Length: 331
Image (tube, rainbow, N blue to C red; front, top):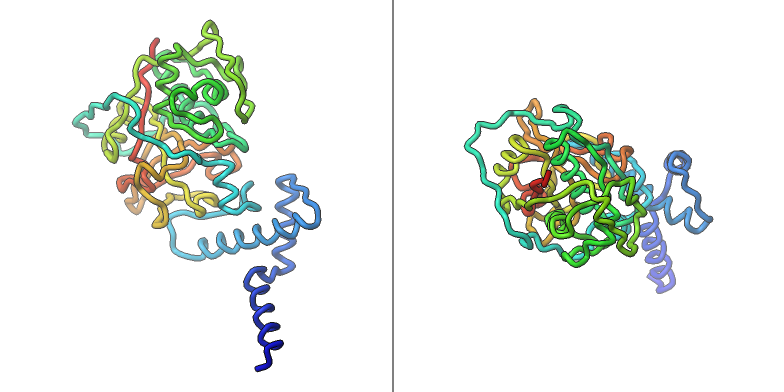
């Protein structure tokens, strides 16, 4: 075969391999998605995002055509690669889950088969949205302390994530680059309080600290770490006491989660690989017997099950039992 023909075939193959053939139907769906999510691109960016969207849509369709315990769908992240998503929304600094003292004392049980703190009373604030900032750790922290405080006092008060972003860096937290709820609870304990969302509103980017102790609305007496990988102790804490903060390893498939019990063979399950912090508000089991956690996320109510997701329980799925914690309130 002539060298020119070989070059032509190789070039065409490379172009086909790199750029998927996009159907008119797929492009129309992209335009509908753009309208729904108020996206506007120039012509070059349009083609780039169309290719990413199409690849994500095909991943979603392929997954949903199989036999899985959860479904995927298009959402506000569907024009992003996972690498872009990871940099914007997940923890990018390595986390040390053994940074704090304290230990949860497990009870003997038996435990209820189903717990949901949202149904027990006014104990869980609405789902919030962290925006383009790796501040999930602050939302896990405030969500947990909001609930713990409400259970203790009867008052559910939205608390400030921005104070944690701006002021908790001395406790090995890194603002929009990440942190851990246990370290944030330690900061609140030693700084003598956390202000309300109203008094210290969320900006979604790093800023200087503007904490005013006189306006603190919630206080931490102690920080309790649950023994690493002891998921039964997590069940005990959620059943007996309050919602619990935890972190886990998010991979590309979780970005597209819609509903059902999330389970993965691709994520890691060790403490050094966790990259997203959330809040366990309850647990239960599917009719087929598959146990799950009920989890509050911080990506707004459009994502997942109105901002919540279920994840398989009892197997340290994606490292979720590696570093869980909760505060003891000072009331």
